[in-house]
Length: 133
Image 1: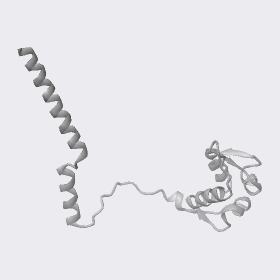
Image 2 (image 1 turned 90 degrees about the vertical axis):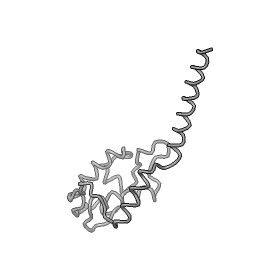
Image 3 (image 1 turned 180 degrees about the vertical axis):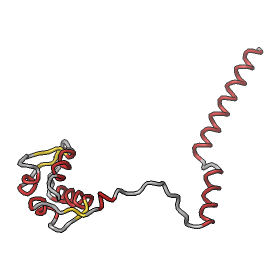
Image 4 (image 1 turned 90 degrees about the horizontal axis):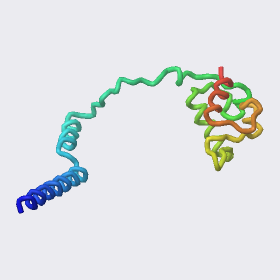
């Protein structure tokens, strides 16, 4: 009988541990709520991660004549050129429906892509970088 009571005590402890684990997952801990109230009480002081954006991405570059048909002729940062290029691709439905990584070229993009009918989105970035000064 001692063996049975040891087993039942062990299973009771296991059930209790499982229940406490479920409660810990479902309710926020006192630590997280306590720390948040202290930070908000002190003010809106943000913690700096030490990471700064690369200035090279924000430097304006001039697109070539072929690329200017798609994104415009004025100097733009590389990030803005990429945004406008993707907006053009989505607006004209140039992304392959089955394989979304492939971009189909229309007349304007074919000159940017070096005459290729279809390019991979990763290859597209290298081809566009050749089109900026």
